[in-house]
Image (cartoon, rainbow, N blue to C red):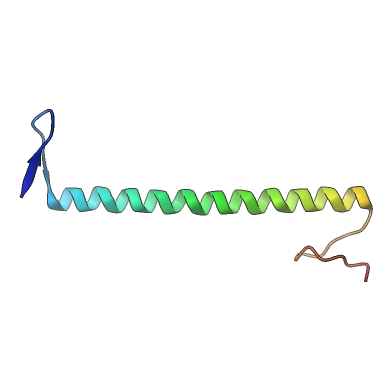
Length: 66
């Protein structure tokens, strides 16, 4: 089973599945990267805020002054 593309290139079912799988993996990698970047940004913001206030925070963001 194949379908024709504009240039006459036949795409097999296997190639189509591989392309779809690659697209899915790339999308998941992008989401993971975005989550990681957001977490890094939040950590930087928390560290900056604690430096400005003079109150150190723990890894989970809670004040350690209690």
